[in-house]
Image 1 (cartoon, rainbow, N blue to C red):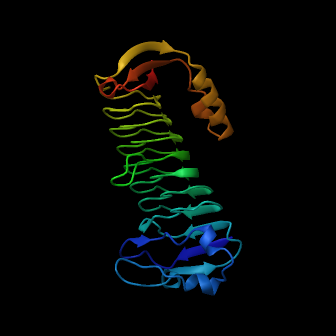
Image 2 (tube, rainbow, N blue to C red):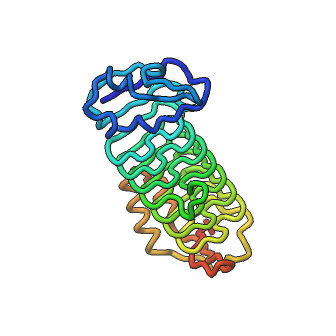
Image 3 (cartoon, rainbow, N blue to C red):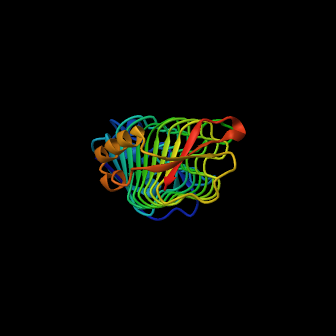
Length: 267
């Protein structure tokens, strides 16, 4: 394992793109310390901010007040990153494989443009979970995201593929403009979940606030899809959520964009 321990909390945002397992592989502690790492507009090195213990690069641990470390795990394709605390914005940006585990909460844009792998957040997630980068038409494209707490607004907006699990509640616009994939929310979702969605499934086990007029009430159903999802949740160690999947009321839409998606809520 490679362990990077923050000496002090950075005074400004720190972009941690370079700190991924494949870029640290085969490097000694001294070599890692000399890698460039800018804080704001100031040039610097990893060793300016971290104490480094080198080891197997397949497992990377970040320890300390990491709430101002942005883009942790960006573009990683293998290995694992464990964050013993909070994480900043754009956690796992464009991640393609491997796993990221956060003991605390994550900031804006976690799992944005995610393309594979698994991201687990023990606390809460900010706005834009699994969303798209500015100017992009699609957000998360594959992989699994698990949030033990709540998520902010626009969770899973523009989701293209993959599975987003939020054990708590989610804010407004959950799954807006969603293209495909599955979002499961253990609590309630805010206003206009699935607005302008084209395909995919949003499951709100705690109910939904202000369902859009483009959704048609199709009644209560016991869907085979939910049984298959329950098996996947069990395999992920989320048996409590799995047991809550049963008969749900289905709303089809969004008719405003000729969408064929669905919003499933507790009946």
